[in-house]
Length: 86
Image (cartoon, rainbow, N blue to C red; front, side, top):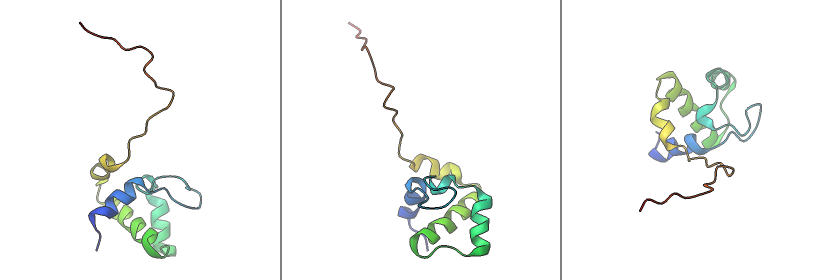
């Protein structure tokens, strides 16, 4: 059974190996997940999370997981001058 924490993990955890190393689990392509389904899931939590990602994708629930991603701040987008309103 999956927990609420598992949804957070698939939204924030990068793939640790392979062709899609560094890609967030929820952003992995569906054909890649189906390949794992046929070849065998990795052991442990990663395998469980990948199964959950496939279920999310098959059922069109990506929009529910999207808000759980950590925000990405770009370092080069700094405010150079503040405007004050008197």
